[in-house]
Amino acid sequence: MPSYHRRYAEAIDASFFIVPVYGLIVFGVPFVIAALWRERRDWHYRLMYVATCALGGAGFIRLPEWMFGNNYFPLWVDAFLIAGVVRDYVATGRVHLAYRASVPFIVLCQLIEYRLVVPYLPSTP
Image 1 (tube, rainbow, N blue to C red):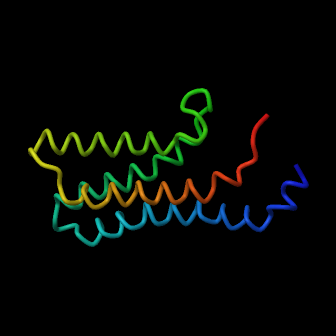
Image 2: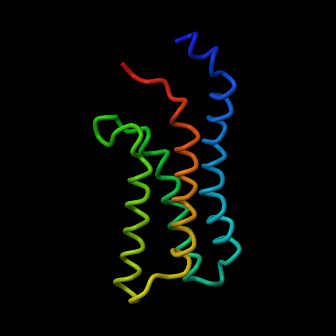
């Protein structure tokens, strides 16, 4: 393992810097927009729900691996986001623009993070 870290030390440091940046972006952007648009209740509620779902990934990663798998926690975040989209569609008959803008943004950020971090994870025996 030490030779692995010596060989990929700079790449590992750079790739794992993406993790906190991802968390700041995926939570911070919907939260700040929701805070600024408090008067527009429909946008505020939906964007706060999206920001809450984004925080859920930190909780899922801390659960035992046998429950959810170690690298699959973004799928559970997406499942909660899709539950919000389905609830919105059932309740109003359409998907609100807040979901149509934020869900693809979060999924894109997840894909970028996954692509940059996973290649440098050490394989488990």
